[in-house]
Image 1 (tube, rainbow, N blue to C red):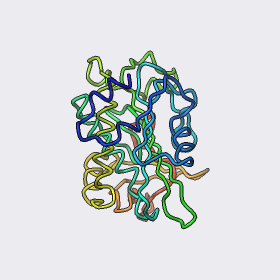
Image 2 (image 1 turned 90 degrees about the vertical axis):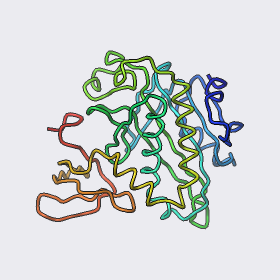
Image 3 (image 1 turned 180 degrees about the vertical axis):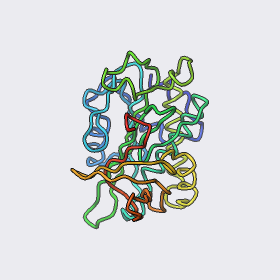
Image 4 (image 1 turned 90 degrees about the horizontal axis):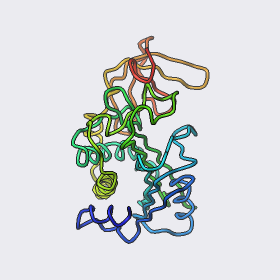
Length: 265
């Protein structure tokens, strides 16, 4: 699969020599984090056909069976202050919308902050992790992405069959995973080229793709549940919410549910 993916990459993709494929891993993010600490270069990417310990935000497991999805992590070394990367997850999400559109010919939406969705079903997720050096600057950023490509409903675990989706389920067509993976890598390279210089354009695209804006939401933090309406995404990638008591707050942590999605009614 590695050679097929490389054959689909654009001719100006600069990191082909740093792309690694594994039939099975526990977690692409975990392995790449180890490699980053050992000095792996900017642009190093890992793709696994199957993950046995894939995980997302808040330590949740990410179902990663073989032969049907793309489980990809890429390493960036921006060398900037962490405050300059507050929009990183937004940038990756918008780039993945570009990738799906290029490979599968439809554009998914984004449920704030890191879910790729279509028709109220989750198609994929993103996990970004930063490592700082002794001067407090970003030594590495690990961008992990999982996208469901070829599954049918019966392929998902029973507890997620009502909320999970795939590119095949949306298009009704067979999906070429190698083309999807190549489109993801190309989109991440394009994102990297503008990550620190064009935040405004990145966030403008994220806002256009974000289906959470304008929706009734619930915010869960620990034992507290608050209800409100999502108004916008601010310049740091936080979700601006007007809560039921009239108070407006920029939310950058907690679990946000959108009314009508994932069982929230």
